[in-house]
Amino acid sequence: MAVYGLAAVFLYVVPAIVFLLPTSLVSAELASGWPGGVYNWVALGISKPLGFLAVWCQFAMTIFYYPSLLGYVASTLAYVFDPDLANNGWWTAAVIVVAYWSGVWISSRGTKGVAGLAGGGLVIGTLLPGALLVILGIVFLGQGHPSAAPMSASHLLPAWAGLASLVLIVNNFLSYSGMEMNAVHVSSLRKPGKEFPRAMFLAMGLVLLIFILPALAISWVIPADQLSLTAGVMQAFDAVFAGFGIQWLTPLIGIMLVLASLGGMLTWLAGPSKGLLLIARQEGYLPPFLQRLNGRGVQQNILVAQGAVTTLIALLYAFIPDVSSAYWIFSVITTQVYLIMYLLMFVAAVRLRRKYPDHPRGFRAPLLLGLCGIGFCASLAALLVGFVPPSQFGSGSPWVYLGIVAGGALGLGLLVPFLFYRLRKPSWRQPEVSSS
Image (cartoon, rainbow, N blue to C red; front, side, top):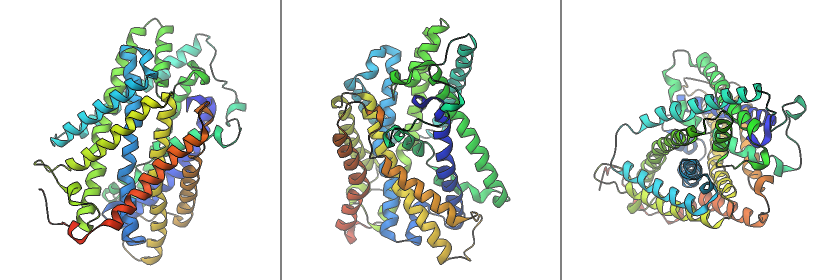
């Protein structure tokens, strides 16, 4: 978002209002009335096949999420060894493959306490570097250095040059996703009707601060036309540290950011695939090979199959000339696949309110129909806008971009689950089997 300068504020606030808020409140009502997560909500509200599609998209988005996340890791890690590697596709591909398969090995051993890595990573690799970047950025401006991006009120709105100039806003929908997983906690509140909305508005304010302030700090230091979508954070740290004569801190910050990202990857690695596995066993949506567990009860075959696809995707970094373009393509496919799930969730919420108006709920979302309408339209708009190459895409062919994005999002998000569903057999159901 730093490429937009002060307009990043607008581009963060709008998705927070039209997407983060509706998904938070709507999923809270669903979670407080129907346990079982998104599969149960969509299956009861619409149909079981679409419930499978929803839980599939919740899992499948991670297939492109890991190459984009680990692409960022590779570019950040490059500043520990050689900053020139940040734009080297082969380096990026190698880091993705090694990091992903290392994560599979760790997860397949059933290591306990992996979730704690995400909590520590949030502080060590996100909040501390973010706060440091903002503080040094303010000092940088206070010393009389001009901001690389204009900070006048006339730049609060992004310059309009067609949809291509605003496409990067799509990534903010991914930044705000996942609230349906947190919604299960609404049942533990004493007065959810009052406390949950208050918590959501507080969380939204904190999230906006965490996103907006570091983005502005980066825009103060690095001109937009020089920013890398994967290495922009490290570019800013490197430039700020150079100005203060402490450039030796750059590799240390790089290691902190890498550890945070890898910790987050490990916590995501087993979760979505486990949810898919439970539904697949219950309803027989996946072949027995993908349903097998190893001796520690981990769905290792799903992780390995996912790893094979991730490895192929990683190799695309080596063949797409611009690492930033590859990173963006994988990010937008991740977002689009995830948004399919949200479209289904909003429709299911409206249908459940109409079909079961008196069903006990710990929380009732205010103006549910309006929230679902806004959230559905915003999600659909973001999904469609993702097919437009961003103006930062450079000289790449828009048709190649469209082909990769459409093939990835529609193929992975719709075609693959459709084939699993059509080819399913009664023998695939094994709800009572715990391991094999």
